[in-house]
Length: 428
Ligand code: HSE
Image: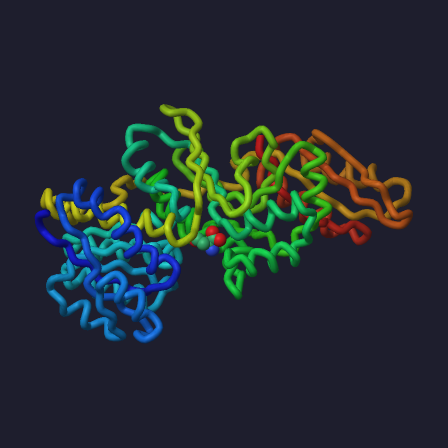
C-alpha cells in the first residue's frame, strides 16, 4: 500500500483509546478509500506507565512532552481528544502554526474559540475537522455541510445530550426521581462526577453553537442561547406530560425566521407521535426541517468510545483524501451569513405552565385573568387532585410569543399565593 500517514494523538481516554481500535479493525477499508496507510506514531498522555499496554498493543510510543509531537516532522495530523479549553486550545494553535492538520472532538473549545481556530487553520492552509464534537457517532456536521448543501434549512431540533436523555427516559419509564436517575447515569458512566454541564444544558448549548454555524452560517455565542437544563425537574410534570400525550425531552433548537435566528436549550413537551419522542436512553438525534428534503432525522449514539472514534477517524480519512488530492486548507463549513438574533416578540410557541395554588374558590378566575391580560388564550386547563390545601393547575396555551410567555411568568411569580412550578415550550 502507498504512502504512510502518521498521526499524533493527544489523550488516551475513552475516545482516545477508541481511535487505535477503529484504525486497526477497519484498516483494510481505510487503506482502500484513502490509498494510504494510516498509523498512530505517538500519543501524549499524563502518565505513560498507565497507558503502556495499550501503546504496545497498537504499536505506538507515548510521551508526556507535547513538543515531541510538534517536532516530529513525520506527524501530519494532530488528533486532540483531551477536552476542555486549555491546554487543548494552545496545543491546536501550535499544531496548525506548525503546518499540521487537526482533528478534534472538543465542543466546549469549538463553541467558545471556534472562530479563532478556524482563522488560524485558514492562515496556515491546514485542515481542521470536528465531526465528533456534536452527537458523537452521528455524522451530522458532514451531512449538513455536504449532503444538505443544496437545501435550505429552517429549523434544527436536537436531543444532543445522552446523559440527560437517559435520565429523562428513566424518570418516565421507571418513575425514578431526578436524583435516582442521576445516580444511575453516573453509575453507568454516562454522566461526569460533576454533571453540571450535562444537567444544566451547557453541553447541549455548546453543540447548538456548532450546529447553528453549519445549518445557518451564523456565529451565535453561548451567551446568546437561553439555556435551561433538567436539574430538579419534577416527576409530576413528567407524568402530566405523559397523560397529555407528550414526552419531556431536553431539546436544543435553532430556528431561522427571515434573516434572524433563535437558539435555545430547554426541556420541551414533544408530542408522542413526533420522531424525537421515540429517542430513548442515551441515544441522540437531530431533526432537520428544510425546504428541499422536508423533514429528516439523524439518529445514533451521542457518546462512547467506538461511535465517537468512528467520527474522529472519518475526519482523519477526509484529511488523508485532501492530502492526496492537494486540497487541504479548505473550511469544514464554508457557509456564512450575517448573524442576527430573532426578537422575543417574533418567536412563537405553545407553552405549558404548572402552577401551585391554594385550594380555595377564585383561583382559576385569578389565573384566567392573568393569562388573558397578557393576550394569551388557553388550549387546555387542568386541575390535579389536591390535598385539600394546595392544588396544581396545568395550563397549555395556544401559540404565544416568547415575550408574552416571559410576561406571564413574571406576573404569576408576583402573585403571593401562587407558585410557578414549571414552564415548558410545547412542540407541535
Ligand atoms: N456528556 C455528553 C453527553 C457526552 O452526555 O451526551 C458527549 O458530548
